[in-house]
Length: 372
Image (cartoon, rainbow, N blue to C red):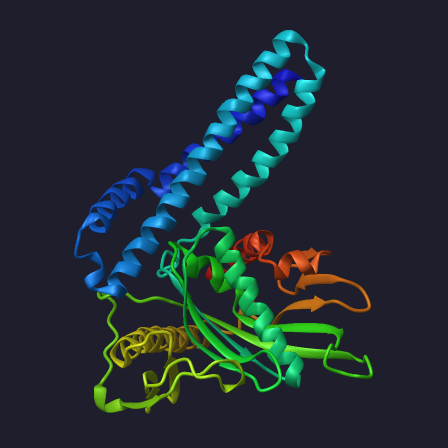
C-alpha cells in the first residue's frame, strides 16, 4: 500500500471518529465524569451503599468509554506520523507495520461506530441479565452456568462492574437460574441482542457412556429503570417471602432469613435477591429487578399490539438464536446474523464483541425493514 493510500484511509478514520464523538457527545460524558467525581469524593458516599455502587460503577464505565475513545484517536494520530516518516525515508518495514496497525485500528473504529446505532429508548441504560437452564437436564444447568461466566467475563474484559442478585444452584452441577446487573452505559442496548434461546451440542461430561447431548438455556435482558420511569407497583399486588440464603450443595451463606423473594401476583413474575446481608437491602434490590421486568413486559405487550396492527413483518427474533457446537466439530454460530466463530473457548471466555456488533447491525436493519 502506497503512502497516499494510507493518507486517504487515515483521513476517513479521522472523519469517522469525529462523527462518533458527536453522536456520543464526549463533552457531555466528560461533564458527567466530573460531576460523578465530586460525588465519589463526598465523605458520606457509602452511607447509601446502593447509590454508592451505582455512582462508582457509572464513573468507572464512563471513564473507560472516554479512555478507549481517546486512546483510539491517539493511535490514529501516531499512525499518521509513522506513515509520514516511513514514506519520507522509504522505509518498507515501517510501512508494513503501519498496514498491520491500520487493519487493527479499522476494526476498533468499526466496533466503536456500532455504539452510534444504539438509539433505542432504553439502549443507554444499564442491563439486568437473567439466565435459566432449559431442556437437557444437568447439561443444561451446566450450560446456564457457562453462559453466566461468559457474560461476566465479557464485562470484566470491558471493566464493567457486575452485581449478582441471585443464583439458584442445581443439585448435581451448574445453575437453575441466575440474575445479575451489568453497570455500564449502553449495557442494555448492547446485550439486548443476546436475548433468546441458546443451544449447546457436546459430548456430555455427565454421561458415563460419552454420548453427545443437546441442551438449552434462555437469556433475558431488561434495562435498569430510573426514578423518572413510570412504573407503578401496588404493594398489595406483591407477596413477599423471606428465606435463608444458600450456596452450592446447600451451604449456608448466613444464619438469618435475609434473602427475599417477591411475587407480583397479577403477572406471576417472581424475583429473588440474596446478595446482601440485610433483608431490607435485598428487598430493595429485588424491587429494582421486578420493576425492570414489569417495564419489559409492558413494552412487549405494546410491541405485540403494534405488530398486530401492522401485520406480520419479518423482524421478529426467533427463540433459538445461537448454537454452540463442541462436537463433532467446533463452531459458535448466530442463526440470525450468520456470524460464526471457530473458537468456542474464546467465546465462552467473554470474546463476544463480534457477535454483539453483528447482532446490533442486524437488529438495526430489521427495525428499518419493519418501518418501511
